[in-house]
Length: 230
Image 1 (tube, helix red, strand yellow):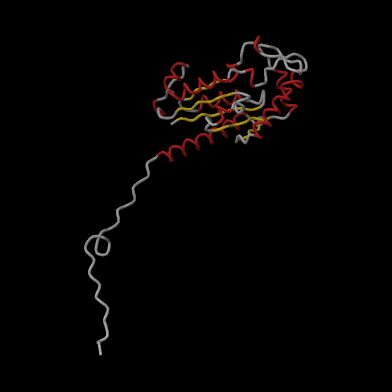
Image 2 (cartoon, rainbow, N blue to C red):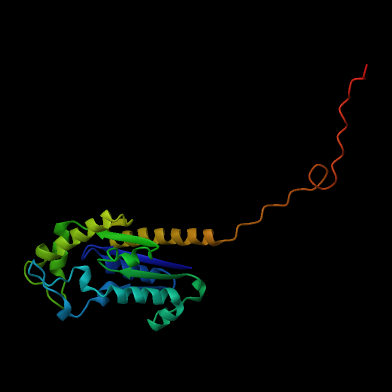
């Protein structure tokens, strides 16, 4: 049984924190981080807004990410061993892949691969404050959040909704334990539904055989009485 779970949403919304919690709680679970597929810095264009375009789909090698997901689909156990993930014998038939990233639902070839799609949101002020407390390999230049990061988040969210991509919205201001439990319960219900759908349908009980039920020849019905001819 395979399940692909997407954890998408706004920058600093809690995607990686939630992913790490799910990784510890779920059986035979692997994670692919979208951030691992950024193109080299010298391939990131400068946009009309004057900023390096880190928060656009073109900054990511999504074909490579898709190939990695397909490699998992072809052999979850082999993929898990290659990534140092132990396979639990008590759940050997259940394999879960979590994808974590801010533009997971903007690359159309991958949208239909997800079994469950979650989308973390937080208000503008909270997001801006969290972003200011983070330290990035490439530091944010002044004005990046308002001039590029937040507008791109709004753009891609509107596009996702216009395309009719169905997601479960999560409030990223809620306690992390509460969010994790909500998603865990949902994933476990999905696994249960998959297991029930895959279970063979029991054969209906045999109908009793006997007279009038196909167990013997039917007795001939007596001919209707006919009036005597005059």
